[in-house]
Length: 172
Image (cartoon, rainbow, N blue to C red):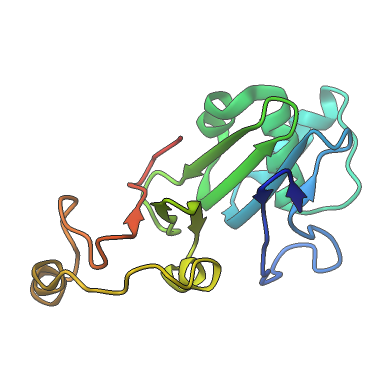
């Protein structure tokens, strides 16, 4: 999906609704575009609630349920109802705003880089390098030392200074 300098792409591992749920997924009115990594555990319950409120669905994917829930509830309302492991981005073509969110425990990664060439995000650092090949690849060895010692990198450090990781339960 491209929209005046904004692009969303997705490579999908299909687990639920193998024939549907293609991404990026646009809303029926084409206002919102979603790219989503993860699984919404309570999507059947959320879908039933949305159907009772008048929504109709083209497929059976948790992706479509997430998009419709966002359309009805907005980002904060949507996040309050979601149970699962996820990271997602929703582009609002009308308002020209990008919403990004990550699950409460940070199971699904969401990394980003902000440079003079723009803002890039993805579920893997490799994706950032594919989109912006000129990103600096110099490692922060003190961050790497923390990772090798403690099995994680504290919030104040970055393995690659040019790339940052959204903290768990982050919305932007």
